[in-house]
Length: 365
Ligand code: UD1
Image (cartoon, rainbow, N blue to C red; front, side, top):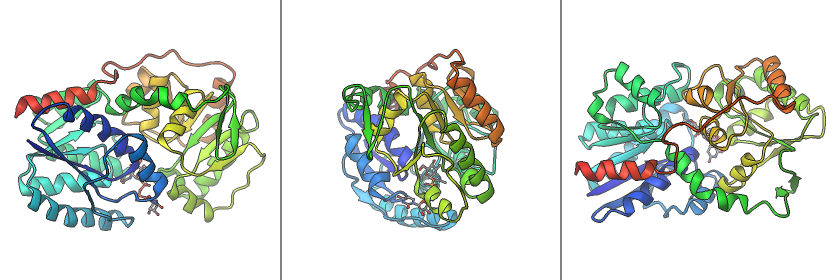
């Protein structure tokens, strides 16, 4: 059978890698990899393909940046041509980015079956573009692969027939499990150096922030930078800056009140994983990082009012601090003073989700 994978943005790349590898172990499966070009910088895309062992994309739609409507429409226009020529038996889409919903919609109209990897997650916050992307993709998809039970419950509530839904576990964790030893080998003589910065295990904080709700509002961004500066008086804070955040910072009056908040370029997968593993604390608004810190047992503070990944809070190391910088400061202090919550790894986050997806697909053909 022929399977076409569509990916476009950084968090998609860690999800497609284990699925492609698992499908390659089944005979008679031909795979095509399409990159929409939503992310195109070397450090947002190419370096991930290299480190994850992904093949070069067979096709790059090169859509680049734009408003949501422009980006989504460009992906649809260009992908339709590809699908009309290739007519795959199944298209797999990943996560919740604009590339995901655009591809699913084209498939639905061409009557090409579509599978959604990481289905069923809900933040119940429709101001997040990703929530719209998830809901629409799940309505359209023929096969839905969920990472945790809450995903199945959400889909049942939305009337998605149970026979379409498969609880397979977390593909992002497959990649983490496979590459953690490689990442940890980057620590040399008990220390880690990246972009000229050297840190000791447990003696630094790692931060990423890129959600529109946090970085597109200059006042909010200034408050976040002030809080990170304060927290950085206790331990160095390493902050790899997403291109969106870098642009927004240029229009913002923020003052770094000490020398321990280090703004660095976006990091590769392996460098970021190596740093997550030995961080005293991670502060983020990313979805995937809430999951990775839960698996690694590293305390995580999420600068959001809600999460589509509730098991990271109920079972894992994640705590929502909302957009209240007082709460962020207090929670960070508690963790740095050794008050960490008990935690466990969610069921089926075991490195074998890709295998389960491949088996489900192959057994249905
Ligand atoms: C996208 C996803 C988000 C995901 C994030 C991971 C959507 C709606 N959002 O957000 O869910 O968490 O990726 O990174 O799909 N840019 C560059 N170089 C690049 C890519 C982007 O400079 O390689 C700049 C562009 O100016 C662009 C901006 O970053 O306008 C935002 O990029 P975009 O893909 O629109 O959304 P992200 O914020 O990256």
